[in-house]
Length: 204
Length: 209
Image (cartoon, rainbow over all chains, first blue to last red; front, side, top):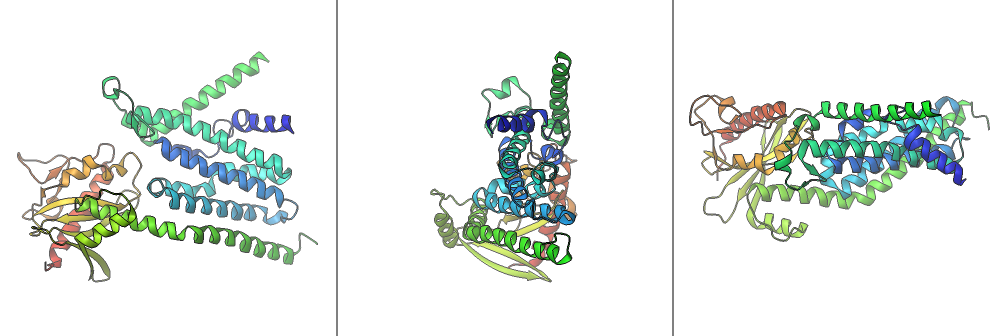
């Protein structure tokens, strides 16, 4: 199981990363990455939903009628997303005011349904749970990396705290907090990841 | 059990809906008190900020007390619409606040505008809720932006759309203008439009102080 778990995490975080390999969940990756704190809450929501959805779909895989499996998956995903939405609204209302619309959109995040359909519906609960966590983490790592760069370049802050002497050495690029900034960063991250993969393929 | 039979499929969906619906309901009910408390605290905080009321202790109870002690709230109806009016009590020159709102860039923006008793100038503006872009349009909430409204005269003699001007203004010494938000032109324009329209409606209310 140890090796299997390691393999699942390696696939979810690097080799099959939802963002730069599977190109899933791009909409929210573009929308919430201009401030790191918003991104962290979004990542929490996605990890929670991918993990529990994969586990639930796997537990029910032998009982879900094949013809309506996608409807059932949507029902499961929507329930968990509503729970996340309610919890964030109750515990962090100020952040919910900003990311609320995007939290609701986790329901349509392709990563969750993609993993439920491709992995959880065909595997046992524990590997499915780990796959959900791994994919959520793979999504989150890329989002956090993009958010750190966008917030620093766009606002000169990190988690809302100004960087030391930022006005002296940096003039904020407004475009980095606007949608084009997200496209630039996503393209750069994908470029780096794909170049690295190609080098590794060539070496092997 | 035949998983392809219609009865199995219907039964499965009914059970799944009941189970997951119950789960969501449980979480919702468990946090209901917290949600109401948060909403009330947020509303009170916005009203206190709008009327420049200092609340040293940031607890919900302190905000409740501050509102009770300083503000009288009543609701008036204009056609189908209800609008809250906030009157400052026990002040030398009691300011008067009004709910105001309109369509922003993405969705409706709601706030409170506090005016001098003669309605000649804005004392302050604060926002209850909006869905503008984080980092751009959402900056309407930031202090540097709302501070510009403090003491801003309303040019009642001008056409409705020019009583408060955002951004560039022609003519030297224009006193009824503020800076718009860079990168959030649509939000700024929308706010200017509906703020001016709401000021006109507020003036027509002819509130007795």
